[in-house]
Image 1 (cartoon, one colour):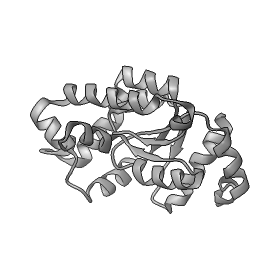
Image 2 (spheres, rainbow, N blue to C red; image 1 turned 30 degrees about the horizontal axis):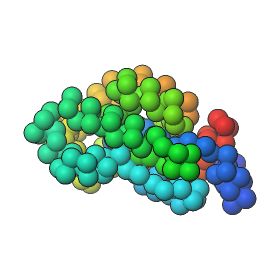
Image 3 (cartoon, helix red, strand yellow; image 1 turned 90 degrees about the horizontal axis):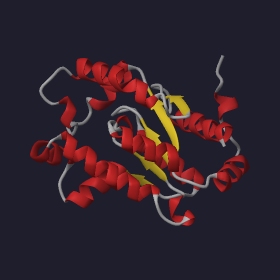
Image 4 (cartoon, one colour; image 1 turned 135 degrees about the vertical axis):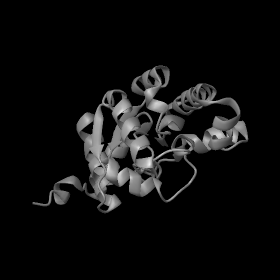
Length: 194
């Protein structure tokens, strides 16, 4: 049985939900799960700005994430990532209402996770390993996948990170179907959580 109908909110319900959101909606989860594309669609529906934390980090550092990893290593990157996310979560109420897509490892960092849980609405976008492997295979911009079998690396990272991701109060499965289905599940999850 298809539950899509129960997951879609009417335009009026979406408007009402948008007015109830008083802080950033922060999408967390594995690389390739669709945080940026789902985030952009959510932002459009909720009439809020969309921010990709990775793009903000690259702008602040004036380097690509791959270059930051290669030059300074992951701990340096995670520290900068935490500072950028803290800045994105902060500010006057009108500026805090936005959709933020985070990098796959952001929510795994205990300090960054605490900031997001305190100041945002954390939504864990989850997916099975096969779907993630298929999606990340489209781009060669993932520093954690270089020099290894992507399937093994993704399966290991997913297993390592699930305990952290599970702390997000909203958990949505992103399947290989239409993205609008995932967006609908996120909206419903936020509505139920608020």
